[in-house]
Image 1: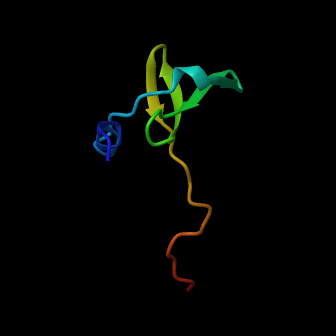
Image 2: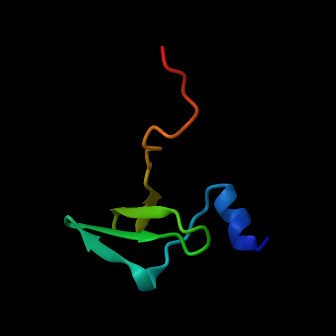
Length: 62
């Protein structure tokens, strides 16, 4: 396990600046180590996007 994966595990993601694109007026990209989707919140400030599980998680029907 490389140091980048350990940094991602504790929440210190780093954006891959070579693959940043614009979607709906926002800049989005992926983490260089774990490929988590990220978006630019403020200039030069990136945050990991919350991705829904599409209902595939463990759930019980009532």
